Image (cartoon, helix red, strand yellow):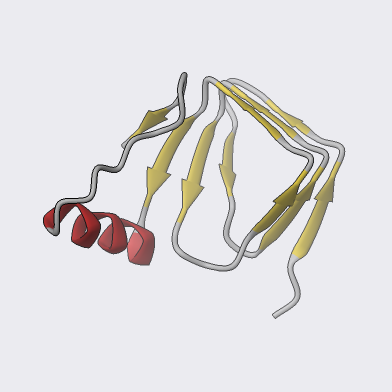
Length: 82
């Protein structure tokens, strides 16, 4: 599966960005909701600021398993994880 390339974009408040199946190049994520379901994604030259991360599907199950075996899953400073 080829990733959809997204280049030189800024995502802001009120936007929901799904990471699965996408390659982000030189993008900025500022105050947006970021959703990850466990699919392939790449990014290079991106910045993250005050984003809310949500894990769904396979990614959510992985987070639950890691927490069950004692791993502490914390978002990066200034980020929110649900």
